[in-house]
Length: 476
Length: 67
Image 1 (cartoon, rainbow over the protein chains, first blue to last red):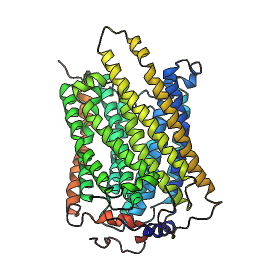
Image 2 (image 1 turned 30 degrees about the vertical axis):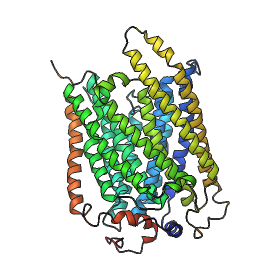
Image 3 (image 1 turned 120 degrees about the horizontal axis):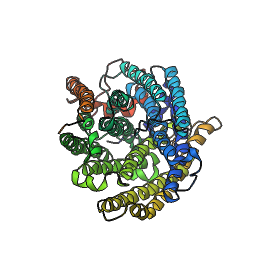
Image 4 (image 1 turned 90 degrees about the vertical axis):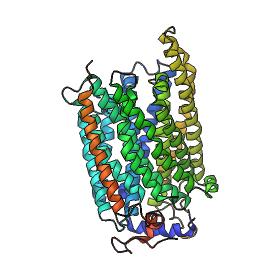
């Protein structure tokens, strides 16, 4: 059942009167800004693989400092901040009330900016813990915990005052994100530093954190956003709410046990490896529940993809989600893992998850939300469309080159007669493709940044969009 | 042969056992709260109208049932 287009704009006008959305603006504009800044870092790293001497004599631009800055900047500066901003947008609307405290939300945003700027300074200065995804120095990590408590309190307090007893699935996913993040972040950033936690024990905790950072922070946050924006952008109800609950609860039961699959064939117990493999394969259940629901929601609505950029990002993100979550269980199998583990396959897989899936979904949300909260039109539909295709073509180039290169690398590594340096030299063409794919992706980021900031900065100069004329007046 | 991974396994799996226990508790509660019953599809219709429903509906009331 599709909803008539005209009803949406009236709804949007009513929403504008109720919601202040200051926190949404602060978080989203900041996230988009960091996306552009950290995109430059990503490009420098990709260039270093092809031309190792590039900026090599400047300590701040060495690989050891650039890489953690890229990872943490993209994860916390861009993606998590964008998801938090979108959560501040959708939770009050789903609950039928105002955000519990706009002041607390703005304070959280300010603190988040302090965290990201501190992270940039400290990581560039070489102050880091040296743990995957947990590189931030402990004082900065403490600030992250404080900011997360402020965010969680505001969201839960809003949900507690909701007008409707039954919550939409996005609300469930966001509540899960907040609670799971508390456990996961504390494990990765603090439990790993406890006295006696060294060697393989530290690695076990660290990988448990790293995998669950993707699975229990970015996955539920991204799915919350997708469950909200796919029906909203397509203007049609979700296919099946009960099925979405099956996906949510199966994710809650299955995901937490999978982290040890990062250490297959490593010096950890065989039973621990087997548990992680079994639960990794079981991940196909929540993934299928989610993807089937999204695809079925679009039944009879696919024609909208042609002129709806947000929907393009959302459905491409859905396909990348299916692919990345098929890859994950498959390379958790011991036989496949023996080839791809520690190779370029892994960054190819990780980039499809974090960029191809969850960044695509977040960008769809940002393109949808920014014109609405600033009560204007998107600055340029054409630029938005171009950004999509730059991300898509660049992303496909990067993912496929890294998968193929990773397999190639793994086969070479499994042949002891090949000197290691030869395996490095052999990968140069792959890294060249990655660099030029990165140039395309970065161009997409620049267009995205320009479009979003121009929309925000130009909102005061232009007349408000004629919201009651037709549906989708805000575009995207 | 000693298994030196036990301290971290006990710690991390205890934390995640707590999460799984919480998931079981809230999943059972969701059944009690009607998320798996005949009204379980209601939120997906209501979310499409969430902007217009504000301030006009009494607390705790669900939106009108859809076909």
